[in-house]
Length: 305
Image 1 (cartoon, rainbow, N blue to C red):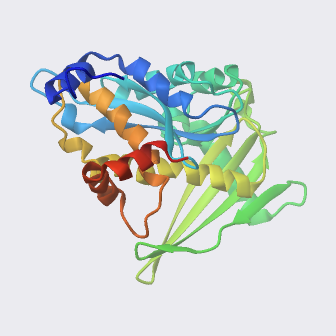
Image 2: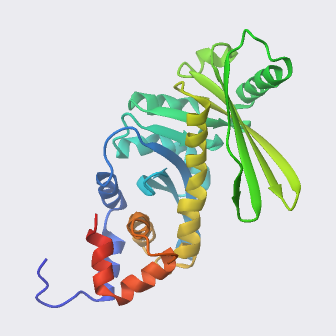
Image 3: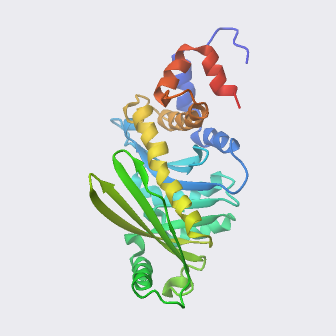
């Protein structure tokens, strides 16, 4: 790019970010990572810093691939309550054929599952209050399995090794069964497997346990489901936490027009760029500072494969 008048000033960049269409900019993200077989977690985050006198805070629903630490795409909604309506539209923005979408309980809707399957992708959906009857049926079934251990019911069980970090020890146990019995099978024709995930945490010698249930449009091993579920949880600490703490998104001053959404997209592009090069124990924040001061390091981040 030729710049006969020199590098544009900050006002020029500001006007570009205000006027650029977020959907078009987000489309370039998906071009970074094509081909099937990805495990993508879908979840929403409110950009608190985008709130102004005349505008409520913008809420963004993102598809996040934990293995590559890259956002496949995002869709902005006005309120967190509109997240359910946004999720079915997200696959239209991406090439998701052959992928696996893991979605939290808010997105456990028949219409969402049908849309993902229509796009030739699979889904793993968390069960909670939004599907109370189905969740209770799945929970009762696994309670019976764990108590009676019937030989007629074939289940796959996997338990993770203890994981230590942040002052706690955590283990996960996954139990998977074929979905050949739920009464809701007519309403959920794509259910192929059901599963229970039990997380046990030990902090300062005190153990706590939590249990969650999931449905899936495909069957695989308990260990593989464990990796998919863990990958979905990573959207909180690998994406949302990084945006909040490292990039300080909630304190950002860009509020006008499309600026908050476009800056959110650019931050998501920056995450895998900063993560791909390891410099000892240099944190992401310090890499950002080094790139701002060292043009050669910036070029290395942008162009080194």
